Every structure is written in structure tokens, then in C-alpha cells.
Amino acid sequence: MSWKITIRARADVVRAALLAHEDAEDWDFSIVLGGGQSDPAQPDAWQLEAWLERKPTAADKAAIAALFADGAPKLIIEELADADWVTLSQHNVEPFTEGPFHVRTPDHPPVPGLRDFVIPASQAFGTGHHETTSGCLAMLAHIKAQGLMVRNLADIGTGTGLLAFAALHLWPRARATASDIDAVCGPVVAENAALNGIALGDGPGKLAMVIAPGMEHPLLRAAAPYDLLIANILAGPLAELAPDFRKAVAPGGSVLLAGLLTAQERTVRSAYTRAGFSLRARMSRGNWSILWLRRRSGR
Image (cartoon, rainbow, N blue to C red; front, side, top):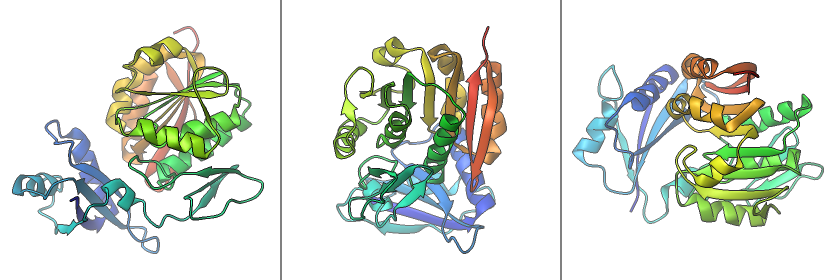
């Protein structure tokens, strides 16, 4: 059985709780959190969701409630039968278009004239509907339009593989490496690659997949330096990885960063400025920031 805890609150309250979660050094990472707008008609109506593969204990509920500084919120607790919680969180997603890309689940038809990606709801994050992922698709299209040449790219925290697939569409002769800390992403990316005509392997136009935290895999290090490194993860890990990304990116190369709330942007940008990167472009999607930075030459 899986379980879900939902807390509904104002946007600023949920954002503050997500920031508190990132700062919680003793957090139990078997409790997976997410947050965002709960009602498109009410931009300030947000909800925080916690997903567990066990019945929430008193300690679990107390840990989640403690993220809210203004008092214990109302926790809505649901039992989710035997379906996995990530798939349930992605059910009934509608197709969408972002630049040259059309992203859909298998129960929707393709759109002629666009690069169609079929991403089933699965055991990995990244159907593309979250504002950070769709924002990355938009920024990738912008980067391509600016004339950036990419021969070697990496997607750190790839989830379903969608952003790596999109980058390979824009730069079809590039060598691509994708990674994720979650072992379930290996077979998910392989299945999605087959669905979308992406060749797996090592070489131009192909995608290699590894399981590792950050840059901690021999293949990731051996494939460097990268012209483009994509990381749609969380603000804390993004800031921590800035020195590692500097080592992995060629002088003049780019990083595309997402997964950070706008309130966290200053901290992340400061980390990358110290690591020798300069901001080229930014966009916001809802309360999330998407950043394109380039490594300065000579550092």
C-alpha cells in the first residue's frame, strides 16, 4: 500500500515549507515531497503533497507538520491501494506543446509538425508537465535559437529521460549521457527511449544511461568535458554541485539549471558565480526559475 498526505495552504506558506524541507538535515527521504498550484483559477491556492510507501506514523506526520512555521496544518491522509505513488501523481495528464515539442502520454494522439514525445506515467518523475520540466524544454529551444553548438551533453537527474531526448532532437549528432540517483530510472529511460526512437549507447546521436548521485560515476567523468549540462533537480543539490559542474563543463560551455524556487535563485546563482559561471538567460514558470549559465573562459 502507498499513502499520500496533502496540505492545502497559500502559495507563500507552501513555498516556505518546501524551503524548510531542503534545510532539514535529518529528513527521512523515504518521505517524498512535492508542491505546486492546486487550482489554476486561484494562483495563490497551493498544496504540499507527501508520498510514502507505508502508513504514516506519528513521527512522519509530526515531521511534515513541523515544516510549517505558523502552526500545525490540517493533514489530509489517503491510502492509495497498490498502485505506485508516482504514477498516481501523474494520472490524467493532458498533452502540451512547448516550442518545437509536443509531450503526451500514450492515450493521446500526436500533433503533426512537432517533435512528438510519448512519456507514460511511470515510476520516475518527468512527464514534462511540471513547470520546471516544461520550462527546461522552452530554454533548450531558446539556447538552440541562439546558435549554441552542442557535441557532448549530460542530463543529471534525468527521471524519464525527456530532457535528454529533447536535447538530442535539437543537436542530433551530439553524444549524450543521462544519470539519475534512483535505480528505477534505468529501465524507465530505456523503455521511453524505445518508444521515442532514441538510440541507446555511446557515440554521436546516442544516449548512455547511468545510475549515480551527482557526477559520481566513471562514465560521467570520462565523457567530460560537456558543451551542455542539464540539471533539473533541487536548489540545495544544485548549489552543492556547482564546483563539480565547473570541472565537468568545458570553458564556454553551458549549464541549464531548474528545480529551484524563485526565492532560492539568488543562492543558486551565487554558487555558480563563485564557480566561474555567468548568467546568459533566465525565465520563470509560476514560482520556479530556469537558468542558463555559461562557464567563463580562463577560470
